[in-house]
Length: 511
Image 1 (tube, rainbow, N blue to C red):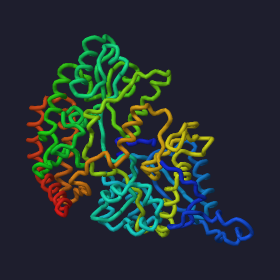
Image 2: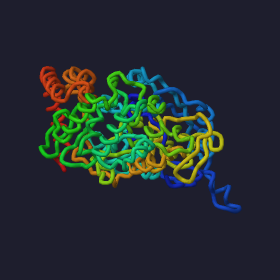
Image 3: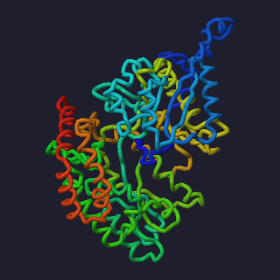
Image 4: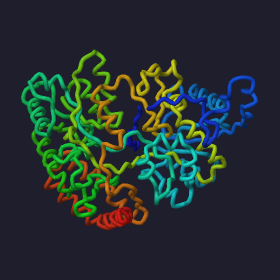
């Protein structure tokens, strides 16, 4: 899963092989100092206790409920496993996090790890030599390296170097809709397989249901609609629809950067959005809509947005607490899905170059890449905050909820809640497997806007003022595309496109 704060997002939070080890005593050591040989020699074989060094970390958001007890348990186990470290984790408000961390770095404050990302200040920190390069350190720590797929390591480098631990769970983006299965069955409609099937379902609801409207989603997420409603969705045809830069795409056919609105591959998606808005299939309030989740839970709509990220579907699991089976997920071309991915993650655990304990910080990250240690931090104290359900699921027992995207997300270790609906788990598991995706030719590209920061700042507001209304259907496709094209040209958008193109060319030239 990739998470931008969007953003709330990213939330996200949730989210496999059991490795029962006593701990990690160092970078290459798989067992801690408390595990020795049996018999009379056991005590003499144990290494001497290490001096404990407290490592300071900064992460965004509110401190989780019950965190102090969990952190104490984590530090107790770090001591038991003779790692030689304790954690001092500080949470800063999202509203000021990026600025606060930048100030701390500039002031030379001694701390050892923090969350950064290209959408925060990571590119600037790299340019300023403020982050520690981690290639050699990761190679020396087998648990850490094995807990993250090779593709994530390879395609989340910056200028060929590991500058942060990539944090994510899914390996690509898979979008669709969550629909009311009971309404589909009420009207004798077959399981939705195609966009034509979806359209028939939505129009049937509109024509026959007095108190249920067809489709709702929050306006801020509508930029995904043309991707979901295109015949090419999830098929990895001849155009990459997303490159991690808002509003832009890359055509593999022409090897050119283009505006997403101009992409021929999703032109049909924009036409559908325009039609659905005009016909009342999409909520007329979409531009201002922020309560889609609540409205769908209240039974006022028959379909809403879905992403196979391990977070979106869980928002609706309470609707099934009555034992019903009234929800299902529709993924366009799901039976043939092989979507493009760049394996790009949105969040990174970074080590400041000024840290006095960088090696020890990496030892802790490696220790946390062992399942029992990972589970302790991410899910809390077993028996109090959670209990395991097999090797890959868990039952929630308390309100403890750690934001795994700042530290603990590991694709091979994360568990899913036992409340996750069957369809959601199916598609989430699909999205965590690198083999289910097609490698994008732009893999390894991370846009650095520094050279065109003035022009980029000018065109960025167009996302909310024109691009979103176009994607929502509020602006008809033909009118919205022309308006956006003209505005982009007048504000220096071509210079931004040229810079994106140059950076992608630099990545693809060696392939």
